[in-house]
Image (tube, rainbow over all chains, first blue to last red; front, side):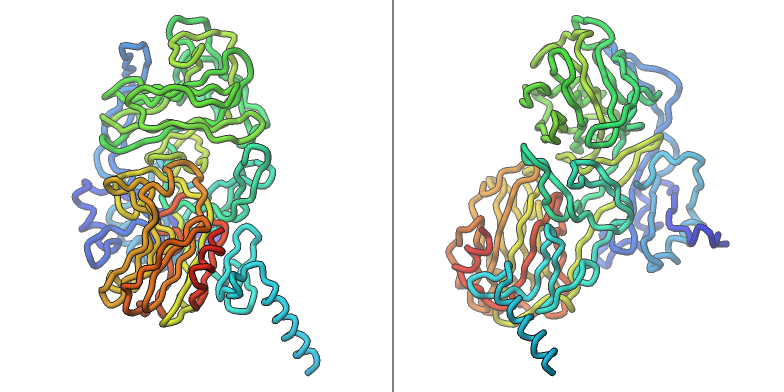
Length: 110
Length: 441
């Protein structure tokens, strides 16, 4: 259901099983030569890849610099932003099959 | 009837005195991005009717006052200004064909929890080209740079890829030396030094690929450094040493910082402000629809000028300036090669019915760098191909036997391009060697 006040959804956060699944899951965004097309006037795709999360452990290196220990989260993440309705059907189908709704996205569009 | 005659004469007068005419040849297409003048044939028009610009996100640019402004999705960044050492200069349209992501969180506030390190950061205050700034200062005198660091590390990076870290900073008190440390857990510290008080690039450690300073006026400098990732985790540390290559610090040193960025790429791109998440600016495209492109089956001429930012990545066509391609057997291209011994070689390619001809400048005609000025003009004919670079025509090639049929083909402007475009002109005729020399001046 479309919220008329907000208009149709343009941003899609997808979680794939792995990088290897991209050509099959995102097949609508590959050209006839099998090349991934990440940007056209109709859409942009940001391949975020593996997300990481702090474990709560702080690491201190030999120089005394401290940084958080990070661990990889499951999945391969892809953000899609539509600029037109040309790829809307494909994006909405992916939203049904692979869409996620993060409370606080780790990567957003400017 | 008299009115019609009057307008016609006015139009003729306008054309005869056009600032865009070259050797008596009036261009059939003019995009003057600096002066916001656009013309198709004999009719002036507007940007949106002349060229299709697309970008799926907002983006930032610098206005005539030297201040960062944000424009919305699909809004072209015309009127982008670059500081020339004494004034902000309108350089036309800022065009970035690469998407970039700023991984620094709270990129303009070093007091936020995303930031670590012993250095002190002051309150965010109005001012600076980016709108705000804050002070940073070592928390104590030190025999190492521990008290002089503010950093974000532990970020996900791809081993083998090139990253660039930068900050917009200004001298306030003390030694005035500043370090961009491209931290990598696979290599530890990689420091590049900058003298903010005198605007001088200092030394760098061996693992830093390149580093530099971009003048933002009033003492503000964008200091940047690039390096190759050797692990899956890294980031940037900003540090305030006592001098070039020095590892000690003084609590009396004060530097102003307005913004920071850590992005995958070889050179810094436009600023992407962030809060609690990394932020992506989408790639841009500029497409001239075939319906707007002049075309002649015998002779064409094209001119373009601007400023480009590039590094030599040992590749063909590392910068793609104009790209008019029906297919690989029928196309007119202008690119910059960096393969092998080439470091910035401009090459014009014309392929018709599978037969390719080339016209190239010197292997190092353009030097890799930030906002490198360029101005070229080409003439493409059924029996010739030639280029002029910065006012000098090369020797014409006479190998072509036909011009490709691109009458129904869109032209991609800045297909692979990070920089500004001042002007783009097209003639549906041969403006001669003298003409391309004049046009590229």
